[in-house]
Amino acid sequence: MKHLVNPAHAVWALVALTGCATYRPAPIEPLRVLEGLEAIEWNPGTPPPDVPTDGAATTVFGPRELAAFAVSTNPLLAAARAEVGVRRALLVEAGLLPDPELSWDAMNNVASEVVDGTSSSVDTISGFGLMFPLLRPGERGARVGAAEWQAEEAKRQVAAAEWSLTRGIHVAYEEVQAAEVLLAQTQALTDLAESTNDYFKRARDAGAATAIQANLALGELQAMRLDAVRADARVHQARQALNALLGLPPAVELPLGPGDDPSENEALLASTAELTSHAVEARPDLASLLARYQVAEEGVRLAVSKQFPLVSIGTGISLTLPIFSKFGRPEIRTAIARREQLSREFTAAVHAARQEIAAAHVLWQLAEREVELIETELLPNAEQNLELSREAFQAGEVTLLETLALQRALVEARTRHTETRAERSKRAWTLLAASGWLLGATSTNNTNIEKD
Image 1 (cartoon, rainbow, N blue to C red):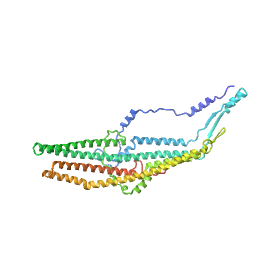
Image 2 (cartoon, helix red, strand yellow):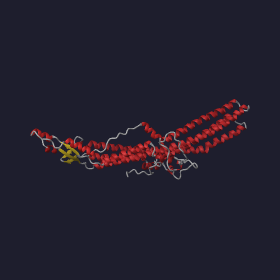
Image 3 (cartoon, one colour):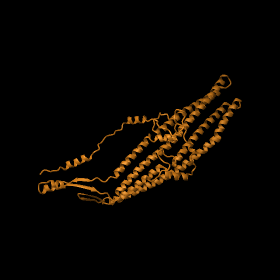
Image 4 (cartoon, helix red, strand yellow):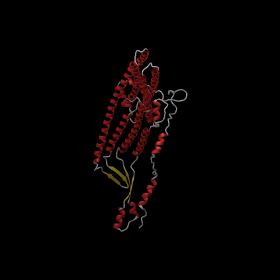
């Protein structure tokens, strides 16, 4: 007797009806990736009203505007946001019910052939089975809860990446500012050294100065020119480092202007204990770790639910007994151990943050004292000494060597002043970021560590 239904055809027909998506490859072309990065342009949009301008044409920007621009252009942030999309897709998967199981058993046909020597359509149809696996108590809630916290963790990781990027941009901005000030100072001192060299060159030609004196003046000029070359290279390196954080090509020239003075932030007046307390509640990296702990918490709940048998019902009933898995006891112990590990990791992260804040606070206070001493004592003394040496040199009371030594001391004092002021700003931004007062452009200053 011919079969009325071909089981294979029926199964393939069902698959054809349900399969709607098709595979589409998406290869990466390295040169196109590079072209895309090179095509990024500085286009921050309309500046806020309080952003200063340099006159009528060009708008200049500080670190706040740079950080807001980098949110959409930094490649690392783009990768972090892509992870958020993955976690949201996993959340949808976690909420789905188990797929039904369609089966066909040929034993009825085989038995009929063995016993009666023939089989019928009844034997074929009776071989079909349809089973619906049932979720264990609490299983779906645990899966969805874990997926929700994974999505939340991804969002907080984006906030942590923005926080880290913002801190890096503020520090890099201060380096650019310091490098450009040093370049301007070096160029001015080079002009001074050139005038001194010209004076002694003419004096030597007139017989009023020795060749040694003229060579000393020339040597000082050559040293200043070397300093100018190094200062110019430092400006280029600092701007390239800032461009890298912004996701811009290295050669882009940004119109930078004066930024906020971090030393005026009232948060710096707080104690390390107060700063640490705020950091525990505000830092995105700690919030991300806490979300990861909540994932582990849901993992324990899921492992506990798996100790029950898996039941499937439909044209029949089946029961999967977790005997060989020891009713989920090893998995439960593993989940509890993972939760304990993340709990200790969070404690270690809080401990590290506390130490980071304490160290940053000490360094900031040190820079504050250094700037005060340089501005009140070292720099005024060096400037006064050079002025007095010029008058004494004209009167023949000091030698050229002494004058050049005092000139070099002034150069070093001004350089140290600029370096120390920049270092104070860098340390202030670092302390504000470590304590959670300097966050990303899309974050708030009071991050809630509980899931919304």
